[in-house]
Image 1: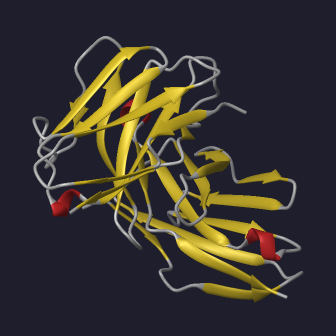
Image 2: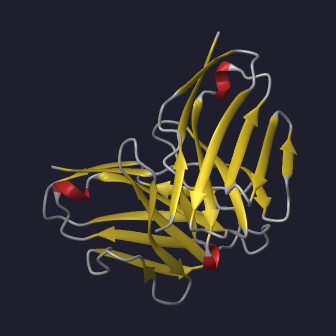
Length: 111
Length: 117
């Protein structure tokens, strides 16, 4: 069966360090993969999209990699700040623009 | 960026009543909107895909008579939870894809927290 796995344990890092979150998937061949940020009690906010033929995508302090052989995406936040604390969701695209979400990883950036 | 508005953000109702949640795209047109539900500490689960002017497509296991979806215009979709029960208590989130938007990017509403007593 199809599965998207994100580390369910919270990731705690110090301010200024690089946070790296992992998204692994099985039994998918997604045309693209997306990352979203979700704050408590709020809807997700789109961050980045990376297509299957792209290895890496950057946006300001964010970087996403996509390895279709390993079936894995890594999401990096450089120079992390307390304001980056949130839950980060990866999502895979299926047919008809349908997205399937992982359970998310909670990131806490401490001073 | 594109804005999707959901209303109400919170609703408390008695068991057996019906609740309507609205999802509006404020500054763009959306032929397709999606409705998700999310339980605490869990992922977003797609409930249905709402297409303007046609019937919604429901995901497996989602009762279409329980969760009525109407997409009457390019900027409005509604989800009605009929005869709500405590197990329907959840966080309901809509999303929309802009006609003019890039591939795949979805814009989400702020969510509606439903509590059924």
